[in-house]
View 1 (tube, rainbow, N blue to C red):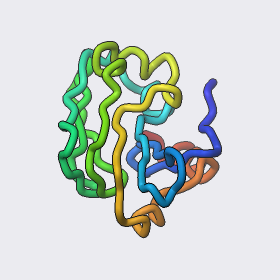
View 2 (view 1 turned 90 degrees about the vertical axis):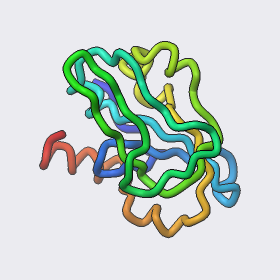
View 3 (view 1 turned 120 degrees about the vertical axis):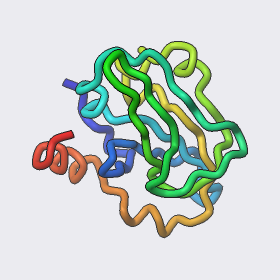
View 4 (view 1 turned 45 degrees about the vertical axis):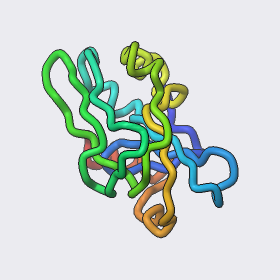
Length: 133
């Protein structure tokens, strides 16, 4: 079973956050935890925002279309979209292959105070074990 990398932060909505480069640059990448992905059927497609779009914490970020459902994924922090992982967009199964290698969006955030609600890998794993997905 895959483990949560210790260099990531997690939202309780199963989105991971990784700082890219120097934290003061405000660039992060986000993806979905392996715990969350293990519960999903095949991912058929993703509806992603456009570069330049503004995301608001705990509001719609993107949709996952699975064989069983359409899932609304919420933004872990407020930010502007600066990049989209086109490999994942073209081949969503990559998320199932390695949840932490394959990010979904690259974002630029200004308010690092919002990071206070994110948790480390240990606390996130404990949250999943206690509450489930």
